[in-house]
Image (tube, rainbow, N blue to C red; front, side, top):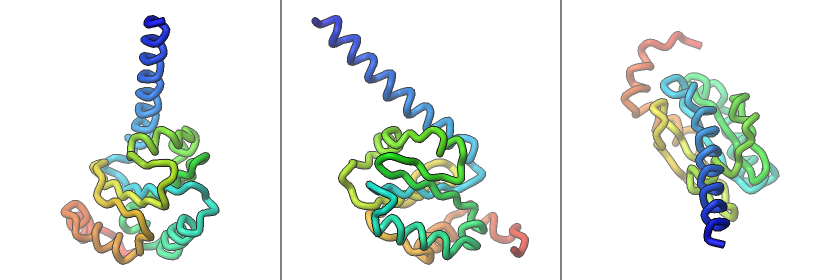
Length: 150
């Protein structure tokens, strides 16, 4: 009995580790290249999720200027411009890694180019708020004079 519980416990830990490793390996190529916005919701039909997605679509030029990629994570799917992340479809890994409960409302997380969390909101994030935060970052300050006009 103890052996069975030990094997089960080890299996759960290894599974959890492999999900996190898969998630990290999918995002790793974008470190130092892109800022990533994670949008968590229970469903892609969630009104707040759709509003947040619309904010990003309406401000696509500003998103592109700031090297932003958006990843939507619902209870059952990963929506992403990053094919490796979308293919991983590791919703549980995302939720566990970023400590997002299944019952939580929409949560928006901004990851900087260094891969660290820069913003976490449990409400709609407007483009002005997001862009202002990013534009105040030292790395973005260095990028701005070097940007060609789009």
